[in-house]
Image (cartoon, rainbow, N blue to C red; front, side, top):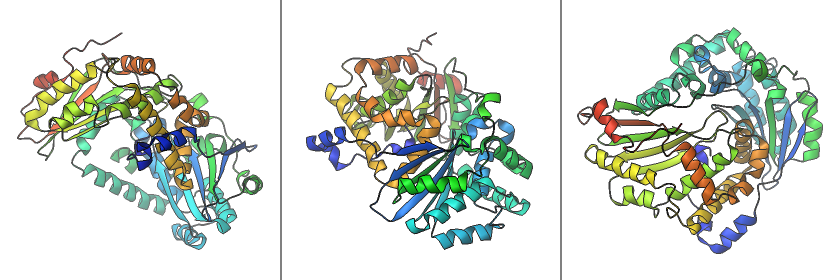
Length: 462
């Protein structure tokens, strides 16, 4: 699941009536069609508020980036909101935004980049024209590129100043051994500094193609109007060769043995992270939604996993989650404890991991509740058209719309055997990365003794 979909449980969950109603609910319907140039189009009508969202998603992002261009998909996202063939300066672009009453933004992830305008419905046609112009004819002016490079480097500086930035980087480098650039949308400072107009044009020519993109229009719109208007503005976008035929995406090789990471931070607590390579869309679709169900079950306060660590006072914070991806999604356990409780905390943690496949580890009621809560969370986000648009963009790129369209039904089919199969395939006895960050004064644990925090019964399965 995408991290920001992990929501606080709302009051509806606690009532049997609410669960029954939710179990019968479905995602808002969408209309799907494809233009002659290969551009997929989705329309979701919601007439509660007189606004519309126009969003474009492109299959670009860090998964397309070798080290020498790592971070340029993110830089391209920034350049999108500058000059184009009609709005020939950044000020012109922003003036157009103001004229149309647009709230705008973009996001760069591992497997997609997305851009969105939310605006009054009466400006919909002008907004479509504006989006089509921006996506098809960026100018990448040298002065604006220099400015946006500094903006992106400023973001890098702010992230780098965070206490756990270096620790997070070390964990990622270990987890994606040698393939870090394919999993890091932020990128690296040298690659960002070395960005040129020619590199931006290369990305545009290779990935910014209608047949590698999705246009989503949601809100107070009529499907017949979108069918009429979209070809008028987007058919000028020329189709190109599939970028992933000549240059297939690289899948990160599996871990072969446990790895240990240590870092010092100005922090009185001990920050622990354990990560495994999880399921990949296209290789094990079922494993991805089984992972969502299992993660929800064990992170509830009354479950033994949480109680053994949180209720005992060993841990001050605890999470366990999976991030859906096509090219290897990570499974992550986050634990906050204290240096003096570190050894005992990890002993209890691994004892709990050893029980993950025990038939008595969760009840039938916990299993059904998890499925219903995940369904409700998904439906809750879909009620807001602009949020639903972002979710559609993410799932289209990472998993495909058929996967997302069936997600709620597939959740309801998860069984105990599915969970046991998932645990055996990805967690128990599987290589992992274990990282610990704590203050320099407390960091008396060297790498040999750090290994004692690992799974004492670890046997790497073939």
